[in-house]
Image (cartoon, rainbow, N blue to C red; front, side):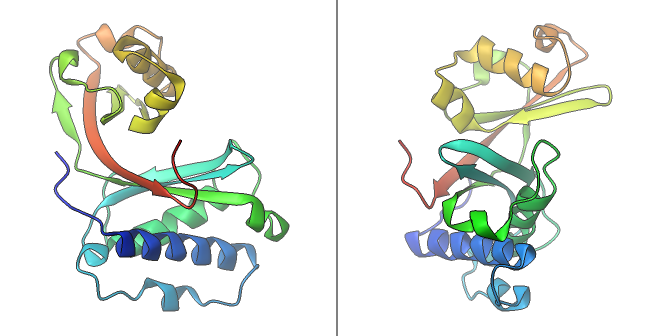
Length: 190
């Protein structure tokens, strides 16, 4: 499903953009945000959704993303890095003195695809996005892999993230979407 390819250079640039945006927002650096968004890479100027996850000491410290972008991928990554560091309601804002301890992970997303049969879900390949009424929630593909979940556990945990009951994915009123992600970070994946 992924329709784009990121080179190592693209990944390094996106990680640099995320870090500079986050540090600027926290008042820890002098880089002006406009300077970090400029890129001559076609893929970084393509519209694509992205999530930015922050980790500190191996634990989640913030994660926010967007499935669809209204501008270039480089801008989306910068915006999500700032949002993850300041606006994730589960955490306090990242402070300048934490910056050296924060590891950034970026997930660049393919477009959402609604599925009608859960057998289409490939654990470790697909992220899930579940909607039922006004409730919605997502879990990135790497979450299932990191936690050793099977398909039903992944579905159940995504329902819980959406504020639903664990088995609500079985209800015909529940919409299930999948997406691929190109996942990379400052720290090598284990």
